[in-house]
Structures are given as C-alpha cells and as structure tokens.
Image (cartoon, rainbow, N blue to C red; front, top):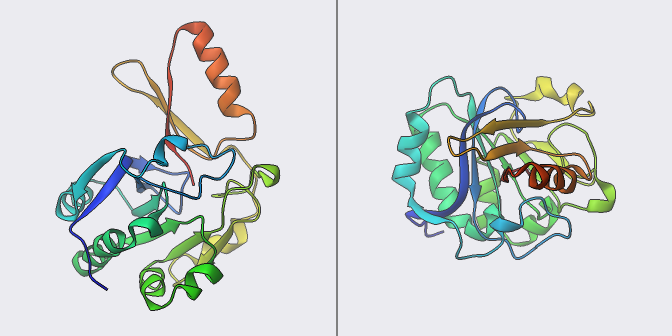
Length: 213
C-alpha cells in the first residue's frame, strides 16, 4: 500500500477520558460519505472541509502532550483516508508504546472484504469499534453511540476493560473556549444536542461539537 504524508483533519483534543481506556488524545478525520442519519458530527462529512496536516506535524503534536495513555481516531470516516491514517499509526508504533483505538462506520466484515490493505490497518490497532451509527438503536453504553456498534480487542492490551463495556452512563466532557464557545466531546444521549442548542440559543451562547464516535 502506498502511504500518504498528510491527513485531512476535522478536529482534535489533547485529552479525553470518554473515548477509550485512560486519558487519550482524540483525532477526528474529515470526510465521510456514509452520512448516517442522526450523526452527531455532520460537519465532518464534507471531504474538503477541515484542514490538511502532515503526518509529521500530527506526530509532533502527540509526542508533545503529557499524561496521555494513547490516541483515539474517529471522524468522519478513517477508512476513507486509509493510507494517511495507516501512515500515522505506523509512525506512532515505530516511535513509542502508543495505545491506539479507532472508530469506523464500516463493519469488520465489510473491511475484510476490501482485502489486505484494510486489514493491515486494523492489525495495527489495540481496539477497533465498528459499525454505522443507527439513531433508532441509540445507547448509553460505554464508548458507543448505538448498540449495533461492536468493540473488538485486537491486542491483549486492554482486555481488563471487557467486563465494563455494558456500563451505562453519560460519557461526555465539556469545556469552554476562550471565545466563550462550549465544546463537548463524547457520546451524547438521544435528544441532548437539540435540547442544548435550543437552551444555549436562548442564552445567546454557542455549542460546538468536537465529536464522538
């Protein structure tokens, strides 16, 4: 597989505890033609949105963070930038003991049918969460937006979390930027986004998603 030197990025967060084991950096790639109805991050769908960033710059950003246990990659759809994401993951594997988790709207079976290239990326992961978001199956279970999504432990690294995957809760974090914008990360419960937009519009505030799975 030919690897590329950049990825188009929708957003990033330097630390989150709601999208994977421990405290992780989060990276959301830009572009997704699956466009699942009810997706919580429609701003990530356009292929030419966001900004193109070099793999080296992303690696330098990650290596400059402190207190981080790993990286979670979501989107958008990472497999629509498969070469760039593989370049990033391979670079991290070569340069340190990174825990890597990735969300995809494609199922494991669909990716397996795409052949060796897709499986090469999956084999580089510690945790892979597959399946499209389905609004009618929305769930409050850990790390998932809907209950059709499956959590695959590709390595043994985080097996101790297997017994906690059915826990339900509010897996979200929020912070206020310097400009007064409220940004949230994680998996909101059904109806949360519309309710928050309505409330904040009434108060003259803005709600900006970073994104979830």
